[in-house]
Image 1 (tube, one colour):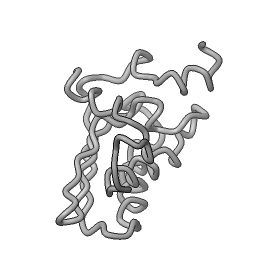
Image 2: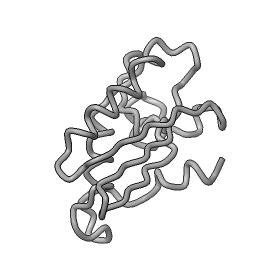
Image 3: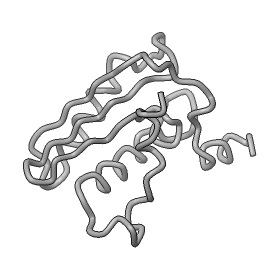
Length: 121
């Protein structure tokens, strides 16, 4: 599980350590604009995004994600929404969204920002 969650602890887009505004940085910004319909927190801070892999040369983005539950009402539409929004980015030529159920999402994947937003801190 650490392999998936590891990528969510990267510096925030625009942080001086990330260098130029990369496709990955911009993809994370887009993901932070997509909200879970039942929880007032974006999907990135909720810990639903397990991986954001990009190839700057080809403009490819591969997203590995989960949902809070397989019964989530947006299980059919959320991956498509993510793909559509990422494809609209300049320099992006291909997007793959892989919806996985292992490891299962749980509250430990919430970022501190999400916990604060939900009154858990």
